Amino acid sequence: MHQTCNEAFCVTLIENEDPPILTSDDLYGNLPTPSMTSTTSVYTPTSTKSVQTRQSRFKTDIGKKKLQHKEDWVVTKRKTLKNQGKGFTNHRGKQVQEKQLQEVCNEKCRLKCSTKFSERQRMNVFEKFWKLGDRQRQWEFVIQYTEKVPKRRQTTEVTKHDRQNTFRYFLPNEEKQKTKVCKTMFINTISTGERIISTAWKKYDGEINVREDKRGKYEHKKRIIDDDMIRSVCDHVNSFPLVESHYVRQNSNKLYLEGVKSASRVFSLYCEWFDADKYGSKALSTFHY
Image (tube, rainbow, N blue to C red):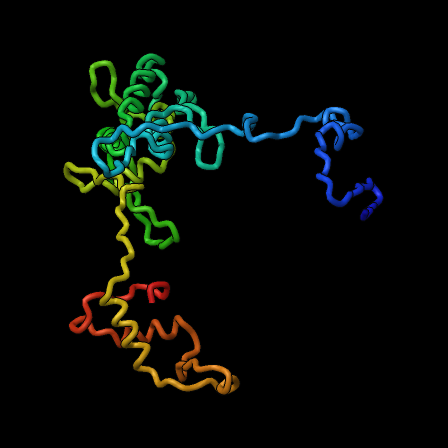
């Protein structure tokens, strides 16, 4: 008979006898259950997840290619609201208020603009301007109701801001005829700043057309690294004399370019060395090189 004991329990093994069959009650009858020791629930694979699942999106485009729905972009919606004079939140998270009709010029105005237009007439002009909803059409409105003429008084003194032209401002009355007003009356009626006037005349060709607003519409050329570009760069690198390392020559097989101090300097030499007749593509930046 052999007897084996430890601190927790003792089991007696008798020769030529089958070992006793122990049940779960015999092994764990005196041990506490998880519900007795703790009140917290135990995570099991069948328990529900607390995190939110991603919302499923269904494909709406026809074909395999994913289309660009620019009308649904945040920047496009923000630009539309801005051009319509409505309130929006800019890219910095600041809330921009909706455009409102501003006050008329004061009583000291030489043209007496406040007596020429009623509040309802000014509101009609304000709504007409912002219902255009497009910056180019708003520039055309400004060109239609302003005039750029040379200034009357010319001096021989040269100043830093030597203005050569001046503007005249008009607003349409009830008969849709242009009536001359002051600058304050014009700007406050359409509720914009002075820059839109100068920008509109810069875009104007002097006859009919106003150049299109190109902000956000430039198609940037993709930077493509093709085989000709790689071959030209490799040939240029191989044109330098190669030397071994002076300090780790015994432990390294690397070769170094003699006389090279910086990548920008190598790229400038590459631009002078490049032959357009031999290579069809050229590295356009130090990053490409």
